[in-house]
Amino acid sequence: MSGGGSLAEWLVSALIVLGGSFALIGSWGLVRLPSLMERLHGPTKATTLGLGAMLVASVAWFHLVDGQWTTHEMLISVFLFVTAPISANLIAKVHLHRLRHGEAAEPVGPAGTPAPPSSGIDWATHEAPHEGTPGDLVGD
Amino acid sequence: MIETALGFGFAALGLALAMNLWRLFKGPGVADRILALDTMVINVIGIIVLAGIAGGEGTSFEAALLLAMVGFVGTVAYAKFLLRGDIIE
View (cartoon, chains in turn orange, purple):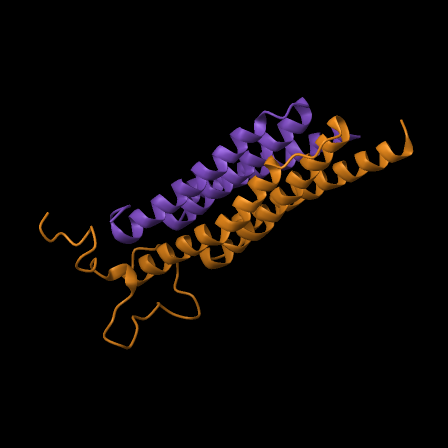
């Protein structure tokens, strides 16, 4: 085996180990952290980053084996990096919504129960669909 | 050497999946369960990617990409349903 190939193999192995470690750390955070808002940090950051490292390892590996660059992996990682914050935001919204309704089984944190906004307008999740939108139930 | 790294990667992802499963069963809230399922999907994508490296063929990426899309849509649909009682208003 040539020195260059061995170096590339080292790089791919290091990236796989890094990715596996990050995925493990993310799930460990999911198990260990005390409240949901803290638990959100583990999977959304560590696990996504770990998967990114594994996808880079995959790109490097197929370049090493076939001698050509593939872009599927980049597609996956771009998609994941775009969608991870969106799903985290939606999960946090569900949590806040249920906390305010008293449905979440979690002890109230130091910030207390989330308060409704002081103006007359309530949270968007409590709002009825606006008139003229497909869900407004007018004329259905 | 690559085999050792792949073995470590598979073991780490398997352990991560087991921990996610624990969180999925324990809860305590619905949001925790959605989060655990979302993380499980991401870890399974990692397993598919590692299996693609181990198998030496480039056909597993379509599966990984499809799983990424379906997992995201599932998470959003579940969260939307809990927030609004409806998925598409």
